[in-house]
Length: 329
Image (cartoon, rainbow, N blue to C red; front, top):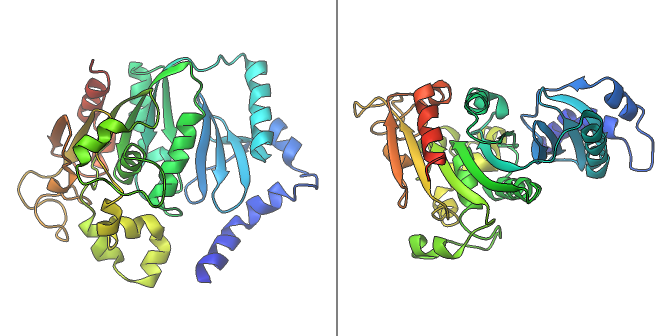
């Protein structure tokens, strides 16, 4: 009940703006003339469609969509079709070419949004590693890992067939979301076969999938999440289902996570001294994830850097390893 009231209060404004389906939204036309500045989404909004820097987001608690530009300015609010029609109009007005070539999808970690991945996204754009760098926002504290994976599946499916190759660079929980997407059917009842390495040969969600780099992934669960969230109702309320799935419910979660069906590498952080950054995590760690806990069978490469969990997101040495692996022939 408390969670429902909390969500209702936070969502009251977008609900009021969206209006009822059969009533006119007085601010709908205003969005088109005077774009509204947003934070890009952090709690409830998740990307569902990209056209280069333009993207449509869905509010996961309400059936409301919005169209944002690359600066997170809102240009439309309403139904998915409303936003798509507005995007098509902008595409024609600005002469935006259809997407064509290669794309890399960047996924942030728990409790944040695409802003934390901006340094990596900007660096990859500057280096022209791909024709398109899609820095995704998803509501990490508001859905299950499976629901995040379904949202990612929608983004991929909404990329036109002229996008010939799709790579991934993901941090922390984002790595687990991509891993779930690349593990097997997005079905609640699906469980990983006993031989995970062989099973991945028989599955691919999209023939355009290329390579994946995981940054600080909790591939064997999160001791920190288990200890800090535990069974506290308040903490579980704040962190949502994904926090539970990485912590106290990891044993159940792991049964849904196979080996990614594409070539992948793992970047791990730590101090390299056997003690790590956090006293709450046994052995070496990056402050959030146990260094050894990032390892996953089937990885083509495991790379260690003397960096913290978020520090790796601003380290150009890490970026260069991401670039090299994704562009490897």
